[in-house]
Image (cartoon, rainbow, N blue to C red; front, side, top):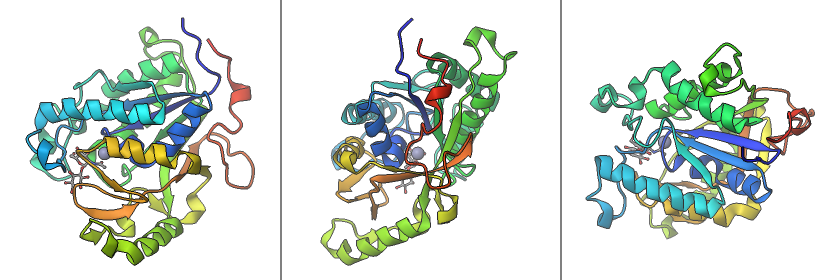
Length: 298
Ligand SMILES: CC(=O)N[C@H]1[C@@H](O[C@@H]2[C@H](O)[C@H](O)[C@@H](O)[C@H](O)[C@H]2O)O[C@H](CO)[C@@H](O)[C@@H]1O
Ligand SMILES: [Zn+2]
């Protein structure tokens, strides 16, 4: 059985690109520090729009396959080697934006049985035994069905993985010590868009997104943890650039296929929703207070 590092972080995301956008510097930092970083992506993004004209021919399964290669390239930029598709590549299909007929496709993640999908994730949790889990809030950050479902499956899997009577064939029970949701403090978002307004005319993007277009924007008081990934800014930008069908990067800004410019944040923020908060001040380490409780490496 392979021996894993003493610090182990699991991130659960909906599509290839979300991990770089939300947690690029966090992943790069912990990978560089020798922690074991595991990414589980729930769909291959088969229903995404495509930015580069030279790739516009890609759609459906061909787009999904291509986005897998983009994800692998992004992981190389972040130094992450353990990245997986929930239930195996193509098990759960991209559901499309909320409200579209795509959401009714029986193959799509939005139609998946949460407990069945969670069992796929329990197997990973009991193998990796992470102290920390990062995922989205109850609205998936911005209401996309795959993001909402990724939240539901991740939170359910964290509960099931800890239950001694659940799925003995999936491995020994494991309790994740700390669970965080991706967040952006409203003042940080507002300051970023204020800076963007001053330079928008110099950028190749026709317009700016709005503060509330940024997933997970919340009042500053909800932020429990701040990971300063400034030393890994270039890695995050490169990882986002690797998702070329979805993201155009002009540092320190980026745009999705909607061509609406937004800030590329290199300090990444979180809300601790399960586990013990370390200290009255904001945490600066997702693993704060956990490793000494670890049962040791395997
Ligand atoms: C960041 C993210 O979650 N992207 C999803 C999203 O893509 C958006 C969607 O295509 C929308 O129509 C565009 O206006 C927007 O610019 C895109 O970011 O939804 C896709 C379909 O489910 C998904 O593949 C993509 O990863
Ligand atoms: Zn997404």
